[in-house]
Image 1 (cartoon, rainbow, N blue to C red):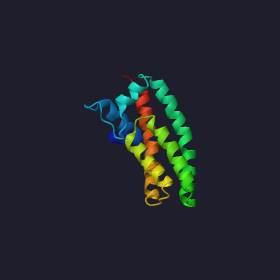
Image 2 (image 1 turned 60 degrees about the horizontal axis):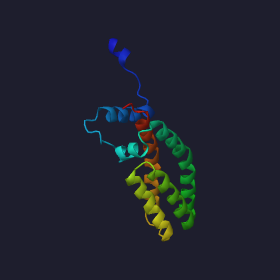
Image 3 (image 1 turned 90 degrees about the vertical axis):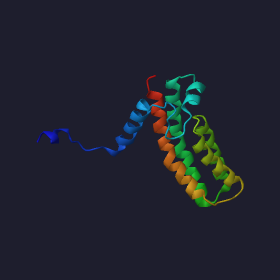
Length: 147
């Protein structure tokens, strides 16, 4: 049948980045941003140097998993000093990309480490764990987008 020729399996790993790329390209509102990156501030900060944004995104992608692993271990061991240190490091990395909501999650974890407060640490950790890969993908799309 002719229709079978056009039906292909969807690869779930490519669906979200493709959708986001289409959304960013065709959004009537150029400030549309599903991960709350302040895209205009990001581009202005890096003087619209998308190559630099991509390079720093790669550094983030290579670095944050180690911080997350140490943060998770700190939570498991109730090592509040480690929680504060790793959350502070993540906050700094994230703030380079003007993702304020995500930066605030890391800041909240940093404060909890400082205050030796283990309430909601698991929930906050899981939010970071879920949203950091999404941040990286969004930054790659922004970095690769032609103006």
